[in-house]
Image (tube, rainbow over all chains, first blue to last red; front, side, top):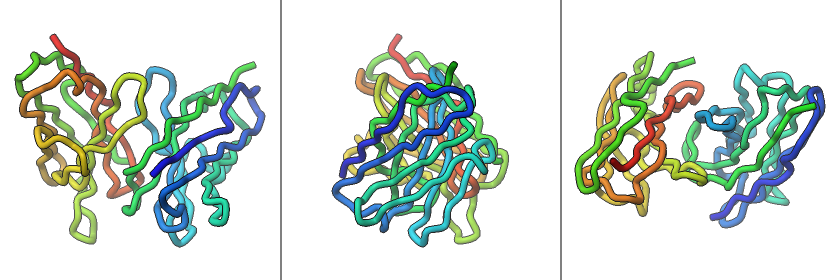
Length: 116
Length: 111
């Protein structure tokens, strides 16, 4: 099982970015897939989750600005982020699990820096 | 959101000695399906988190048996029976019964 995130970088406030998470060793369609972030030197915050049935859920801090999705054919998870703020600066981890609201498998993370 | 608290936040330990971390939730974590979705994660310096324990007391595959979890309702504990050098890192409890939330983390290092 492997998860590889990409798409992070430096972005100006108000900008948009799309993160990708390529999975191997399992199908993203059959797992509960999530994004969790960690601001520099801080703890962990759950950002979003997509259930196996396609239902999506978001933290209040990103609701209306972030969209989680998956491409079953490419076996990839995405996080579309818009109206980015300085407080969105963090390492974003993708992950999956057989159980809802859990993360058994973790990627290595991708850093998003929102700054002018 | 359910607030998770941990104590202590910093835990200096002696190699070979036991260690214990407490985790308390602001709400009872028993789900309507009867399960308690309280999990523990380890984050070694410079690494992604790794799940150690799921549903209070179930060790993930590959996790040494010196790690154990216990508790119920709102109070939970992670114990390391004999700390080894590779156990240095930050330990997080996390609840998945409601919208997932993590504790603030407990930093374990060697005295």
